[in-house]
Amino acid sequence: MTKATLLILISMLVITSACTDTKEYSESETITVGIYPYMPPYQYYENDKLEGFEIELVSEIARRMNKQIEFVETDDKYGNYVAARSGTVDVSISAITKTASREKDSIYSELYMNSYSSLVCVDSKYSRLADFEGKKIGIVDDTVYVDHAESYKKSVDFEIVKYYNYYDLNSALLDGEVDGALADYFTCKYFMKNDDDLTIIENTDIHYFGMVSSIENEDLINNIDEVLMNMYNDGSYEKLRLKYFEIE
Image (cartoon, rainbow, N blue to C red; front, side, top):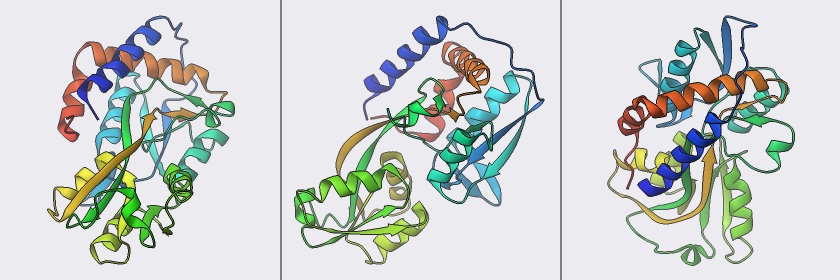
């Protein structure tokens, strides 16, 4: 992902948020936030403490809104989206891709990050998707990567192997259970810091991320958007982004 791409997202956020009439969201002192803490560097556990870009981002947003946060962990990544859509939690985060179908029954904040679907392997054994003919590619179940993998199978005949989370997927790749993995670009980069054998072969589909809520929570999302705009303007978003991501 290029820095220019991210700057476009920032510009879109500032322009759109500046035109939004923010309503006061004061029904509760606490915001319940759905999380899927198995996707570093967005959110993860380190020494039993929640860490990650999205954890810090939503925590700072809540602080500026004078709200407390209650994190609610969901069983799987898609379940985190469903929890927000259904109103089980006020808002969900976990690099949730914005899609046209999801916008029909949920509401997104302004986009705060974008990334790619990345195809990764060990020791540069392969150089392109076509090289995986007859091989195994691992993905995390109940994610957009399932749809992407199914689409790629139309041109390349490989076996899809599903895993519960990105840690399991990374271990399977390193242990040789699968020949490649299809996952988020920045999550791949995170694991590559600890293992020089991993290589990103291709970056394919681009994803845009926003915080998700039920369609009844427009006031909350408007307030989140206003705080996001302020964080862009005062430089705090950029400082947080640079803490967790390497923008090439």
